[in-house]
Image 1 (cartoon, rainbow, N blue to C red):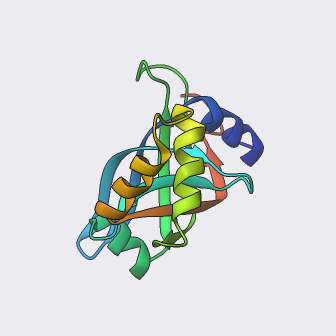
Image 2: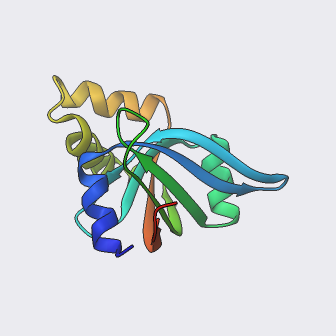
Length: 135
């Protein structure tokens, strides 16, 4: 699958499972995924979360992005991840929220919540996507 086709799918489908490499194998987490202006997939997480720790150690990530109905169309996207901490993560976290949910009722409250929860933004640069055929 072409990377631009995968990005188009992510623009309108935000439910995903993120896979990272842990010391004992693969760790998976249900997440919401967005897309930034540079075409990277974005995920919000917390500083102490396993997915963030795993990606700091090994930047490989894979997302299985699916439709809201679960069964139906889906894509996987694999690539190199970067974990960005606060304060640099704040505006990307705002853009992440806007891209998935629209405008917040109170952006100051949202920003305070991001600080309180020690949020990070995970950026995944797509290198490979699929599926390439249907089974």
